Length: 109
Ligand code: FES
Image (cartoon, rainbow, N blue to C red; front, side, top):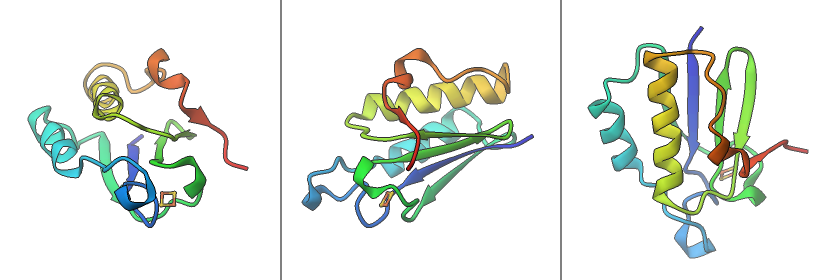
């Protein structure tokens, strides 16, 4: 089953003028290529996913589960998502979300 990682770069997420962090789109794509990802895990740079107030949102659909992350404030957090994608793609498609990202996980209203 394919995992999809949707990184929001919509009307709010990534908008520096709204006080949000810029989404490092080219860096994400480069890391994706460098790690040979794409067969089992897909990257999607998305328009608005809905929960704008969470600022810099990522939605991951994996094994029928929807995982929402929000309030991403650093390139390091985006890199942690890519590192997890490498594990999902190459080692274990059922690998749990890393503990370090649990603090930014949320359930949309
Ligand atoms: S712009 Fe990202 S959730 Fe709306």
